[in-house]
Length: 220
Image (cartoon, rainbow, N blue to C red):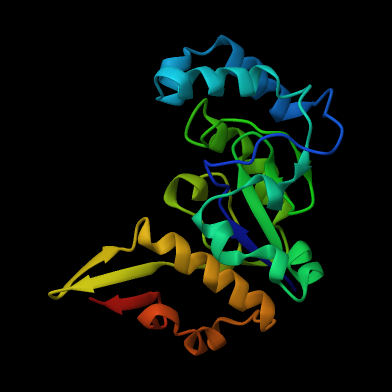
């Protein structure tokens, strides 16, 4: 059974691109682009000033702007920690990792995408993508590193959710933003060591996290 590692996109994205524009799209992506045009920008993006203006322009030009591989487009903390350019076995990463995008559904690292702005909890994107995404995950073993909002966009029969949890004074809490970097490190570790079976998760001990059999725990 093929293993798939699911990761979220990043809100931060690189500008520009060196490849041709999409020009046209179909299906759910096309429907969402139309919905973006009709939506109230302030409610859709939750931004103000120049950041709002940029988001509006980025989506207005989404079909005519240059594209680049998704792994280069996304620039957030998870992606910094993965550090794709220094991976020895990039081809393994390209085969196993899928990114759950609000606008494009399940995206492979080498898929060419433009800059865009759409959170998966907006315009019912997660609900719209769920059937399509889930069909692509059929008969796969999924290692799920998704935040709660993105989990709503997928369904799979075989897999494991991987959470990073902090414990302070006996109380447990999600690692939150701090967990993004360790998630990226974990993905890199999975790829570099060809890990597909959760029984080996106990061998990952970065930054003080230890696998409990249910989640990674760090006492602080």
